[in-house]
Amino acid sequence: MKKIFLFLLLAVASAPAAFAQAAPGGSQSSKDYTGGAVTESGNTGFGVKGGYNLNGLRGDDVKGIDRQARSDFHAGVYGQFGFDDFSSIQAELLYSRQGFEANTGTSGARQRYRMDYVMLPVMYVGNFTDHLSFHIGPQASLLTNIRKDEQTLDAKDNGFNSFDYGGVAGLEARIGPARIGARYNLFLGKIFEDGPSKVSTAGAQFVNSKLYNNMLQVYVGIGFTQ
Image (cartoon, rainbow, N blue to C red):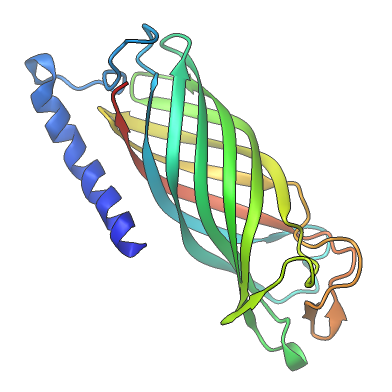
């Protein structure tokens, strides 16, 4: 995965120069990477993206937990359809590795939890300028894997919710086909199901706990023509 992320960084770093050579007169625009075959809007296209996750816990029941955020990564693809030069809709399919550290072990020992999600955000995108935009919209997430330290856990047996939902919002800058952005993910589905769980905090079960993922993402991407 480190090689994939390095490839994305190299692609984004080299894309603006390559695009400037290909564009008439060597000019660059954040909206010139599409061919215009579907819509006159320059905001239509697709691409790949990846970046950094910083995920922690939030909710009414976090006060009794000695917790720490986890740093990890996400990667995936996106497709964007522009209605005009200001408005567009963008959908993404992402693999996101996230989690947290907490005092859930024997006698309050710290343990690391890693949760792998497949995420589908669908967002409205508005362009402030040719190079700067905002995005906001709903997101659905499917939990595909859980690890506690080096042990793989079964989601159902350990009381984890396999489905999550919420919303995302952020800002993005573009130069030619290259993009860099930051996004906040507001998760509204509880991490743990209501009822008994094998996961505990200093001996106390996570029963009916109001605990939610809370994540910031920073990413780079590269867009392709239609």
